[in-house]
Length: 135
Image (cartoon, rainbow, N blue to C red):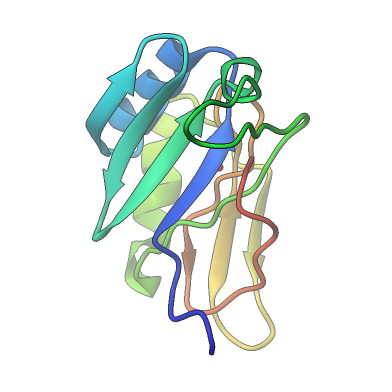
């Protein structure tokens, strides 16, 4: 058996309102569902991007408890010819670019943070990924 692909990725944020404003207003994602104080879920292409309040999800229930402390990491895809447009778009929304990195094997990553401090680079091509953010 081998995992085929990622269906969901998640990050954790204490301020779900700020997260929702960032992911809808800056990254253009559509909200799928929201449970006040617990989570907000977004459509990201054909997949789902989840933002959880770590304190509330640690409580568990029908779904086992989970949560993370500190910044997480998620990597959103973009076409190579979109990198400069993404850079300008992010900067126009007051989002600082921490690093603009060209990978030796091809691809480019723009590293920035969401309001909770999670890394959220939109890369082109293949690049190493860290853990599913706990973004």
